[in-house]
Every structure is written in structure tokens, then in C-alpha cells.
Image 1 (cartoon, rainbow, N blue to C red):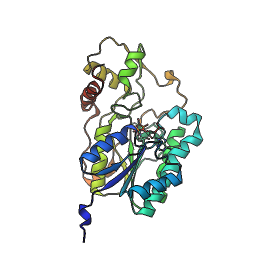
Image 2 (image 1 turned 30 degrees about the vertical axis):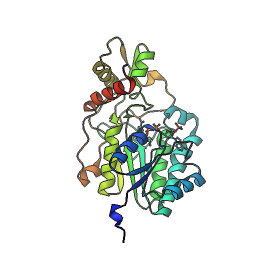
Image 3 (image 1 turned 90 degrees about the horizontal axis):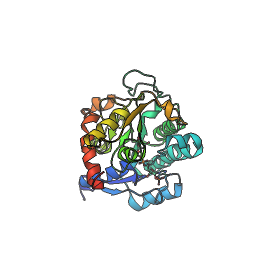
Image 4 (image 1 turned 135 degrees about the horizontal axis):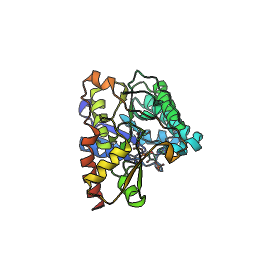
Length: 295
Ligand SMILES: NC(=O)c1ccc[n+]([C@@H]2O[C@H](COP(=O)([O-])OP(=O)(O)OC[C@H]3O[C@@H](n4cnc5c(N)ncnc54)[C@H](OP(=O)(O)O)[C@@H]3O)[C@@H](O)[C@H]2O)c1
């Protein structure tokens, strides 16, 4: 009899060319996993036939859904698209997981919260999303709960890393182009470093406690504080950083004023809190320097 416990674990990482997916591919592969991380063009999660083909060909033990609409304002303009990617897509993946006996890991967001709370949101707080992005991500969580027998839903916040698309990831590009660099100083959450979250996801899966997690670094910050620190560490002194309010940037979608989260379930299963977000920034700056040669 072949020893099943020795079988290489296979993970299908949907949205495979995004920030978290690329980071996960590296960390899971180095832990001995076999990873298939198709791009959007290779696997559209809203296409049921394509999902079935991906499962049939690869026979994953785990599906990690990192596919998502990243632009919060675009979601506000195109709600049908947002719900298709963020609700229908995870539903189809979860359904396919059930059929194949695979486990589902689904990533979600702090934007499911309204943002009026002083202090940390936990799993006991009722989500009350204000934006189409937040509503569609919450609908995706519910779809996974409905369809998947064994699931992990992992909400994260302000995910940044080399090659990512959000403000933190692109802070050096913005600093080159936008003078002065306008940074939001009245919205708080927890910048979360993609490699830390990738490791945390692996730890959660290893422990096997299904449920809803909040996967973030610790500490609370603003993008203004983040940008100041990153630019200082990089030795960039000739860029003026101007604190602005979120309202001044005139985005279409409402954002939560404060969406910092804490994870009750990680604490219960014995996972120590991740490091402070400020402790991750020097590593991020070094990685950007290595990736780009210089600034
Ligand atoms: N970034 C943040 O600040 C943040 C904060 C909180 C939570 N999250 C959550 O964390 C997870 C990972 O975020 P991320 O920043 O790594 O995302 P990302 O870099 O924006 O990557 C998302 C990927 O999904 C792909 N995609 C979009 N529609 C798809 C579809 N129909 N089928 C297959 N792939 C599709 C995109 O491809 P194309 O670009 O080619 O369309 C992109 O490569 C998401 O669930 C997100 O909601 C992110």
C-alpha cells in the first residue's frame, strides 16, 4: 500500500499571477508542495468549464483562491463584474472542491467591515461592508461557506509586497511620479506583508482548524506613516510627503475609516500574532532594491 501521508500535497492557486499568489507559490514550493498557479488568462474562475478542466488535470488537495478584483473604485463602477469575480468565482471553486474532496482556502478582506469601530475588528463583529468591493467579497465568503465542506476563509488587510498593485506596494513608483506624494493619513488598518501572510496561510493549513481567520501583521498604521518610513529607509530625501484625508482623494468607493483586525481563531489554535507591520518594512525595502537594482 502506498503511504498516503507521504504523497506530495498539490495546491491549485487561482489568480496565480497576483501578489499573494506569486508569494504563496514560492513559499509552498520551498516547503515541498506541488503548485499550479495559472494566470487569469489560463484559468478564469468565473468559467465553470475552465474550473472543471483545471481540477481534472491537476487533482489538487487544496485550492487557494487569490483571484480577486483589486481596484475598489472600479468595482463601484462595475458591480456585475465585481460580483462575478468575487462571488460566483469562489462559489464555482468551492463547489468543485466538494466534488473532488479538496479543501478550499479563500482570501477575503478587511473591507467587509464598516470601519466605525474604535479598536480591532474580530470574527465576532458583524460585517457591514459599505462598498461594492466589500459587499462582493462578503458574498464570496458566504458562497464558500454554503458550498465547501472543508474551508478556511482568511481575511487580510492592506496587503503589500514587491510587484503588488496597491499604494504600499507601489510607494516608490508613486514617489517618483507624484510630487508632492499625497498619502492618506486619516484611514487606519494594518499593512500586511505578503510573505508573512503566505507563511501564515501555510501554518493555518498545517494545523487543520477550518473556519474564518484574520490574517494580518500587527500594529495599526496609515499609508502616510508607511510611506514616510519606507522612503526614509530607502534614503529618499527629496520627496515631499503630504498627509491628506481620504475624502480629498475623491475616490468613488467608500472606504472603512478603521478596519484593523485581530484574529480570535489564530489565538485559539495557538498561532502567535504576526510581527508588527513596522518590522516588515526594512525587508520590503531591501527586496524592492534587489528587484529593481536601485530606486
Ligand atoms: N491588495 C490588498 O490591499 C488586499 C487587501 C485586503 C484583502 N486582499 C485580498 O487578498 C487576496 C489577494 O490579493 P492580491 O493583492 O494578491 O491580489 P492581486 O495582486 O490584485 O491579484 C489578483 C489576481 O486575480 C486575477 N483575476 C481577476 N479576475 C480573475 C478571474 N475571473 N479569474 C482568475 N483570476 C482573476 C487578476 O488577474 P488580472 O489582473 O489579469 O485580471 C490578478 O492576477 C484577494 O482575495 C484580495 O481581495 C487584498
